[in-house]
Image (cartoon, rainbow, N blue to C red; front, side, top):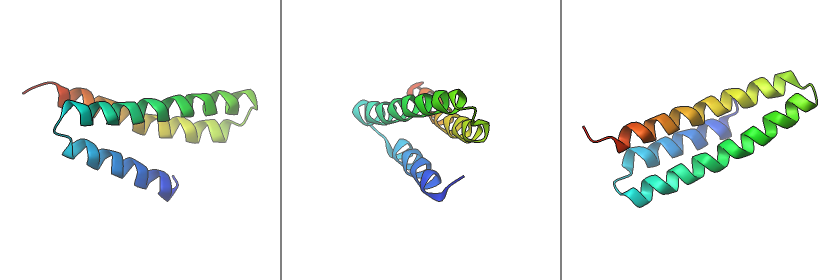
Length: 79
């Protein structure tokens, strides 16, 4: 996993941890949704080109964003 990507994930997780308002949560959701769309387009392209190593790497990145989505859902549920 490249360091730039991991730094991006850390930054998003930090924003999520610090998010206090609904607007902040929506902003993070929007970022995650856009990244997942970009990665979905990229993985489709990788599969079309039979580049399975690239597809595997992209799917791993998608899993990170899915985990963040799950954290967002959990944060929205009041305890």
